[in-house]
Image (cartoon, rainbow, N blue to C red; front, side, top):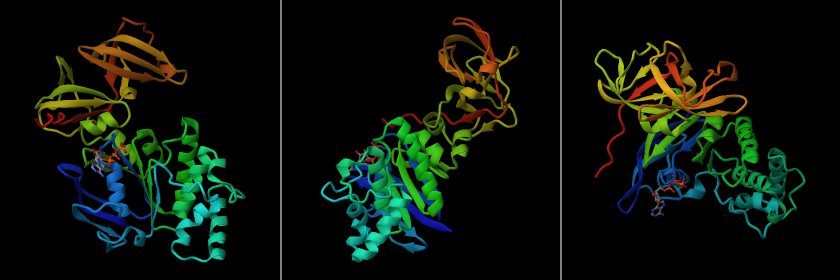
Length: 352
Ligand SMILES: Nc1ncnc2c1ncn2[C@@H]1O[C@H](COP(=O)(O)OP(=O)(O)OP(=O)(O)O)[C@@H](O)[C@H]1O
């Protein structure tokens, strides 16, 4: 079942298309991450869904009903803002109960719901605290509880974890994901952190310059990027200009690579971009790629080796067991793992 359906949605600010003709279907119960660099239109898209921005074009449907012009407070969507927007003059319980109070729920019903929500976000007994008496992670939980207070059909969160330090952030990613799975609520989270998106989401929507570049399951996006932007933005990737020959091989500035049947070719013969992940470069004495070791980073659980290959810097990563016996300045021969190569159309030249 589709929870949300966006059809050709756009939002212009003057001459800027912040969201440009976005069409997506979001299945019910799905955890979606809107991912992209700063300014790509993630927040604007979330605000369009929330009804906090008026679209310049397109339509929005929820549960089969058109809601393009429905007022924000009548959409039954929960929202957590980047700033959290908690009220310092109210205690935790009244913060969480606020959406219920403005909808006219009685005090008894509000307090019962608050007690259940405090249990849900693992803050039992903290209802009487003021916001300034809470840690960063606890504030985050209060904001999440408030967003869930009305039992929303759709839960929208804008960079909810961005203010937290790395450890707490990872902990809260897992907690938020588990909470969402338990409730089964359709959830959209804006993030610019690709690791966060890959960890939490069922569906990742990668945006750039107001447009959806690719929408898919995290591993599909990682393994099978639709274009050079997605390959470069998601995870680490070696992106090398190349020529796709009509016989199906690839010329890398004089180095010829035969492709494996599992490799993916997404463009026509001619100038192209080859993408290969660092973990898909294997040491191989017969390998077609010869590169010079420029830097070695021993991280314990893995070894990262940067190599100079013509004008390009390649990144390779090996398990300690597979570490090639090389030192800086040595030549190392490498072969791509079967299925590790994606040949993509070259990035478009920027419009002048
Ligand atoms: N109210 C507004 N008036 C004019 N321009 C705006 C407005 N809101 C957003 N923009 C512009 O629209 C573009 C998209 O902004 P948006 O906040 O959606 O990006 P974002 O991907 O969420 O970025 P970030 O990760 O930095 O929050 C940006 O160029 C921004 O400057």
